[in-house]
Amino acid sequence: MLLIRLEKQLNFEDEFAEIFPDTEHSAIEERYILLGLSEIHKTLIVIYTERDCKNNEQTILRIISARKATKKEFLYYWIHRKQKEQI
Image (cartoon, rainbow, N blue to C red):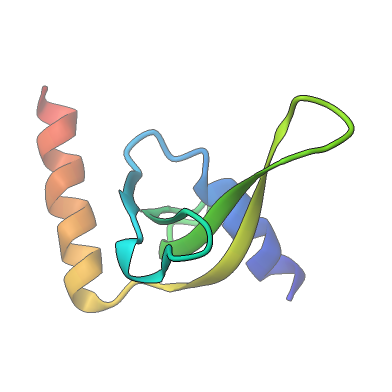
């Protein structure tokens, strides 16, 4: 469980990660879908929302779910990453 939590946090540091709005599940709060690579090179999907911290001006990212990317998501990530690397 600790490794999964660590991977979720590290996924936000992938410079090639892509973030999409999760319009299907954003009725109550804005949610986002992040497709990116963890530090140990696993392609992950992370669903999260942003919350303002009441005590200070920081934004907190609340992880709703995280999982290994499907084959289709995996291919999408790597095709787009290679395109970005060539720019």
